[in-house]
Structure formats: structure tokens, C-alpha cells
Length: 248
Image (tube, rainbow, N blue to C red; front, side):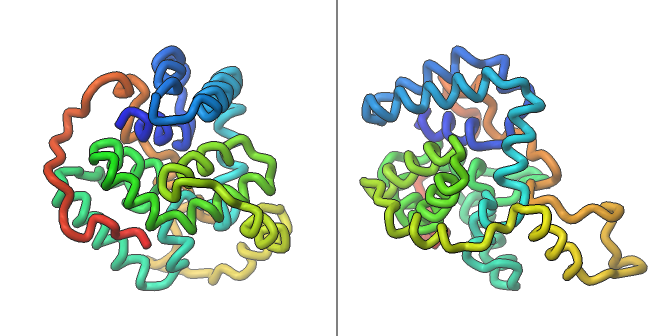
């Protein structure tokens, strides 16, 4: 589904290559799967994004998604946190991808939302909607938090909620997140850093003294490029495997 490729590209870390494919991206915004009002809003989002300099767009993305955990695009982080259950869930999801003929490279994390959207772009509409339905509570939470931060990325999450759940009703979730303590302030980030255990020897972190980034491998190579939007994928994806709705 071309729409999921588009949403994956727009939600992913905005690499410089994105600016070379303005026309393809805007054409994809006319997808008839969206109601006219959403098509117009998505086109506006895309124009506003591409009107920024790449570095400014990247800084905006990092400020929203890479500071604190509350806006993380790693879905299992919202379910399992840092528990061991998250590791097993990721192994299971990788296996689900693999059975569908969808291979990840060594730098990709399976629960990274733009990557999941790329996977769904290769599934039929019913299955893709089922995945988003079962991820709906996380998507609603991200939509509400993005709205609380006045971020234009809230539109992407609202569209995903609409596809998965059929409607967007964020009033209750907005009230909930309004009372949350922000984790993207400098004070909050300093507090998290102070709580990190200092380790030495072979187990010590290899990233100097910087707190860990939430972005997979610093900047995930785009699993789907905007140039792919009008065409078909070279990946072969057979019928959906058992257990496809792995993200709950």
C-alpha cells in the first residue's frame, strides 16, 4: 500500500535524500484511501517539512522523538520498557517478519514504527489495519503527546489511529497526557543521566559520556526510500503468517 510507504518515509528520521523526491511524496499524498481533508493536511505537512533545511528538519525530529522515552518510535518501549520481556518480543517480531520474507539489516530494530509501516506496506489492507488496531492504544498515546507538544507530527499518528480504529477520539488521552511530567526537558534528561550506573571495563558503554540515543543506530538508514513510493517492492512477501498481530 503506497500510503504506508509514504507515512513510513515522513515519520522516519528525515535524511537528506528525502528532499530529492518532493514530487513523488506530494503525489502519494493524494492516495484515495484517505478522506479529502486528510489528503490536504498530509500534503501541507509534507510541503512544510520539505520547505525546511534538512538540518533544521533533523533537529526538529530529534527534539521530538529522541529526547526521553514518552515519544519513542520504538513501540515495545511503551509496552515493556527496559524489561527482559522486550527482548523476547523483539525476537518474536523479527521471526514474524522473517516468515513473511521481510529481512532486516543489522542496524534495524523491529519495533521501530517507520519500519513496521514499511512492512505493512507489503501486506494487504485488512492485515495492515489489524496490526494498527492492535497497536491503537500506543498510537493514540503518541498522537495525544504530539498534540500536547503542538507538533505537526501529530497528524501522522492521527491518520494511523484512524486507519486502525476507524476514528480519532483523543479527548480522554489528551487529559491524561496533560498531567504527565515532561521527560524531554533538560532537567528531566539530566536526572535520567544521573541515575545511569557508571560501568567500567568491558561492560562500559562505548559512546563516550553521551546519554544513549533512542534513535536506532544513531540514524536508521531508510528501509523505504521515497523513490519506492510509486513502484512495487523488490521484496517478496507471501501470505500473512500466523501471529501477525504481534504488537499488542
